[in-house]
Image 1 (tube, rainbow, N blue to C red):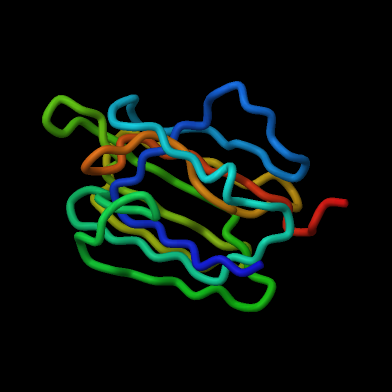
Image 2: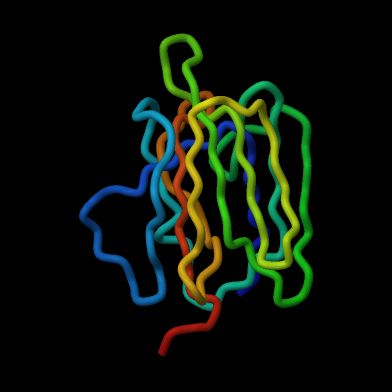
Length: 159
């Protein structure tokens, strides 16, 4: 199953909740604040899925992700055959008294990166467990992304 994964700046992820995850799916650490509405790609991902590209839209802050709008400058990274997104870095800070994701960066196992926004002093990083890739995101968002965390999926399908 092929997914075109869009990450629009201003991501908000929260890797919480008591829902049981299917085999081959893991939640990563969440970065940012608790504002906005909860969102999660957990029900949309599956072990062995293929992510072919990621798009970030950003300006000063991350304003859209798959869960956001179409504002900001668009930047797309198309992944090569057998290339996977295996790292996420998020920077956050206050904007109008709410914590927002200010900068986001994704890294692949081939060393390619895509990023957007404005770096800040509050930084969080998470790497995929061995044999896993970025399959989706979870967190909180409103007009912008307030928090973000990775939904890691196994690269190989699970039985």
